[in-house]
Image (cartoon, rainbow, N blue to C red; front, side, top):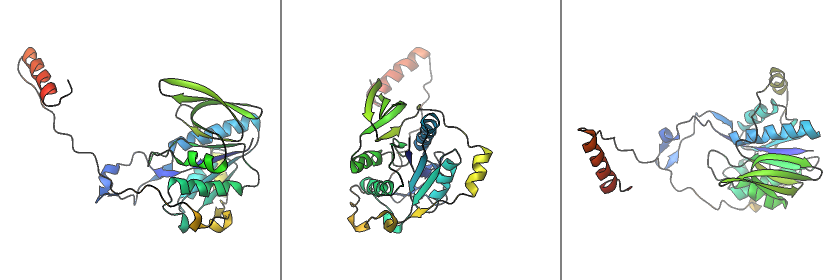
Length: 261
């Protein structure tokens, strides 16, 4: 069971973006970058599938040089190989363009994957579109919000989270899956894994290596025109007097000013 996991590097979730917003843009210089948390669930599930069914786990990431550190973090958990796609021509791609590049890279792997995993969204832009576009580009089924999966021969039996509950679906393999929180508990890297990664070389593929003409990539369909922090919350009010008077005043304020009742 050969599995590919897509990795994205995002700003540390503890980063206070609102302190970095100015003139309609977010300044990300100097932030700490980490592996997208949902992608970590995807890597963990791929490793568990490998332990149960054999095969390999290959990581693919698209991004600047710093993305190599994210790949090494996931290699230290037990993944077999990693590939970084880095080319100035791929800077600032939209979701569809990103998926097209990833699809081309997957097509260059020595063996076609049986499963492709990713987090259901990146916690930076919260779009969750790339896996969907990727499945379309590869002509494969797509199952999102996965919280449980079982392999049965050439198919996967998947439990996915839906509003108000869960549903079970069956899909033939190969297919694209996206991981939701609750799918598993991510392991910690062992000292042996960390030391092994230090000596591992991660190949970097550019546009020529994956056979993509940058001019053929679909242009970004959505442009961010401005980013603004939420408005400052007004200060609270303390209602004095007898409890009964305070309660009446509270109801009046909620009805006349806040207009929530």
